[in-house]
Amino acid sequence: MYGAMLSPFCIFMYSGFMRAIPYELEESAYLDGCSPARTFFQIILHLFCR
Image (tube, rainbow, N blue to C red):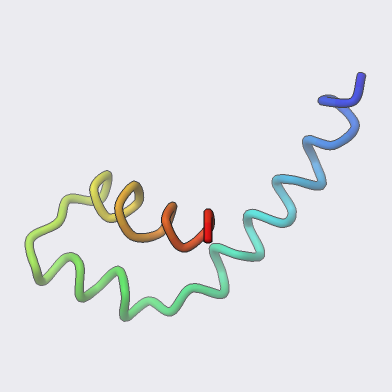
């Protein structure tokens, strides 16, 4: 029950975080040769977990 109630809030918070990340971080990772999956797991996810 708690998972169903908190899931929309968590999605809302995570989407707000994703919008706040500058596009330049993703672009610089692409220029360095990162794939989209590697960019997500090594850059964006680490920023979220800080």
